[in-house]
Image 1 (spheres, rainbow, N blue to C red):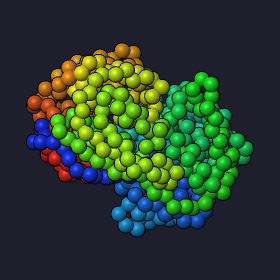
Image 2 (tube, rainbow, N blue to C red):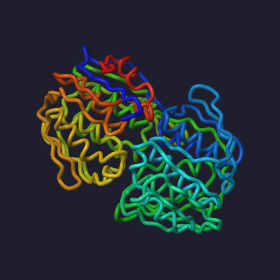
Image 3 (cartoon, rainbow, N blue to C red):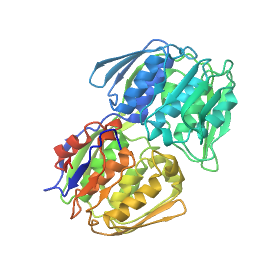
Image 4 (cartoon, rainbow, N blue to C red):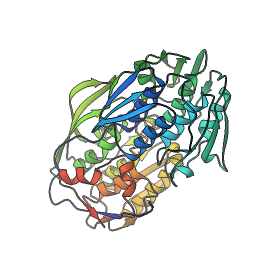
Length: 446
């Protein structure tokens, strides 16, 4: 729990959910915009930045590394960077809060600089393994010291003469891929990463936008090969951050399961490597209308109108998991309300997120009164076509997406759903409860 736990309770919505809202900016793109702005020459102007605690930790870290980072208004920020290889050694420990993305990407950036730094985080982040990042980054010449099990705090001595990396990911991970590419910025020659399945490609897209040469090839086995030409001169640019598709998932699923609902979500990022949840929901029978398609900072964006729909269980293929890795908790909510069995395959990555999400989701679904099983690294939810009963108080394990998923479920259960702590939801979705109440949801302090 957070230092002062904030229990929250969700009760069945009094009527249909309705309205048009914009969820906060994409967290993945917000982190990267600040980081690449710090590595660029000149000024980067950012609009729509997510101002959650995770991203604010990244802004503070970039300041500590010597970049000028200034808030100019709501969602508006400027970054005056130091150039590739030009970051300064920080005077104090870099606290990345709850953000595994920030901690791992920052590790890659520091690994390529001849500086010493220490990274830590909150209690949840300090439980998460860093070895999957430090192992490949050690090949560039950086040195690392961690707690037992490869956990934070992490001390880094960056490489004085970084070497280009050639790394094949054992498990698809956008965080590991991005850390390797960011370390490769400071190395001469070509840094090459091979991933078994395509993961979110915001790092590649944004690197190109800032002036780097990044080539991507699809392999016959379904994987992707990414090659970065090292030591580019990145140039500051303007970045407009789309609404976060992972955050949009919560009001979207709420609209699907609360009878009579219709909700429009504005300006949602629709990158094909992030849109797996929406593909899956439409396969389940969801009424999701995609309109006003456009481009923002090289990313596809659209308005989504989501209307309540009877859902049917489906088989979610393992190769789709990387494109929806953060959305499985809320997909489990949809699956619990659907008719028939939903099998979510290949969820090994959920074992190393903020908590063991696979076990936590299964335990929560059982507590709701739904039937669930774990089969290897698959999650299987047996829906009956009606919402589970609810009535439980759920331990959230400091996992913000887990907390929001349970609060969504409470909009349709016969008995209230209470979470032990919702205080950390603001790390990724500031104003979540207020936005949901604006649509007609019932969420209140317990």
